[in-house]
Length: 605
Image 1: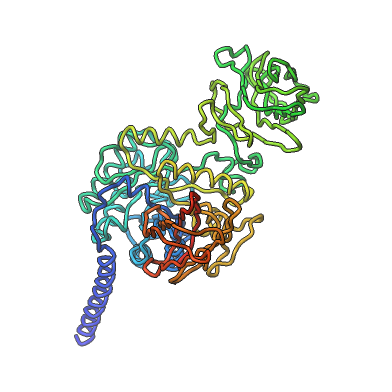
Image 2: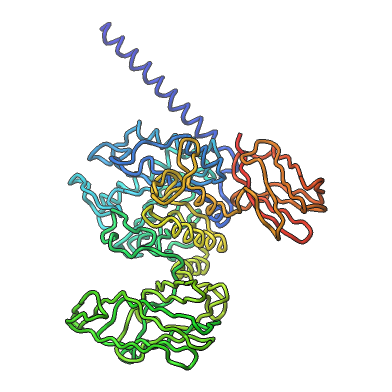
């Protein structure tokens, strides 16, 4: 009896201790939820979120160390405000039993939510591997080899997991925490997908009506889902990895990626097909208008020819190249690989064919004047020893060619002046979302570390510019790792030491969208912002930058945080008190004597 009494006392003591710890955790989460609670403008919210995916519980075996506080403090200090946590359900449940949650592992997710509240970084919990579905295949226990889209047991488990998280974080403000239901759905119809998602949406909103819920687009996160419009506190998430052969070049988990061509940038959303008379419905010439002096060399790299084709290049009305291709079992000098199909031979060339202009022209016409069809890799224009390479990326069958403008800097645009970068699918999503009044953001994009660094920087610079122009929030995959700004392990990147990590400064600058913090040349006037990082006082100097000035300071989301008007520079130096600003990255815009200077500075305390 004495032993039993002592045991009961011990159990009671442990229960009180556990309850106290849970209460403490609840207090922390409740403190983090302080604020207005509900997000009143979901469109604004989605546009302002900018950050990273953190992989602390991404895979139970290979990425399951939790979420260090230091990551949140660095993300905050660098000026970002959003993290997405792609979770593997196996990383917080008992092996073989997805109905049993492991408290010690869930507590690691609690800490991420806590750190988000502490550092002003919004946290979005996502089921990357959900009961019954994951875009990445793996071997599971027999009882878990179920299909989320068709199996009711998997669907019940899926909803149960979201009910668990909804209850656990009920006290956490929607300003701090959101949910993203399942990562990159595929092989499912819109009707079935919506039906399954609504089960989880309704269950969550019964518990937390203000909780923001994201649903990934269909087709691996690529397509907005119109039938999920008009749902309260519901937004959508799309992923932006096109062109896939650029973003996933030599990615070990992608079949065939070792055979992708070496990525280049820019590549253009121009059809790479030239259809001949045998495809009369699609036949059309590719036309470039611009200034092409005598001596200009036009180089066409032909990828593939179907049966028979004749490549023609005209400068003005003069034919400068006519090259006939005939596909047979013999590769001859034109082909590198024989490809026999049910329609006949469709051989691969991947060779250059060129012509030099003997007189100036303002119009180049490239077409297939005889035969079936051919595919082009690229068109290069060489002038004065400089070569501009234009890689064509639209492989959509049946797309007709068009006319384009090439300006004096070599930039290609449509006849009405729009750029032709390969973001057409993103434009369609934007149009679809706007037409249906659907708020959305990009929760994954990035470039794997095998793509040449200069290509990755060029591509991501144009892509994030596109996001900014369309007021789209985003999250890079990932923060630290092969796609990230830290420890990406690129062979061709010059890294900068940063708090024990290796920082890709160029990529960080692309993401923050600002000029260098060093000397900046503006109309031959040299201006400096210093020191950086700064604590309390920031200096702007320039020997010719004087007189009445307006200086505006904004955070990385574009929100204006300070304005100095009609200030005067003395001796070319202005001192600015930034002691009232929190740690993080800030943008600065200074207007003086009709000139505008933009730059950035980092506050670190």
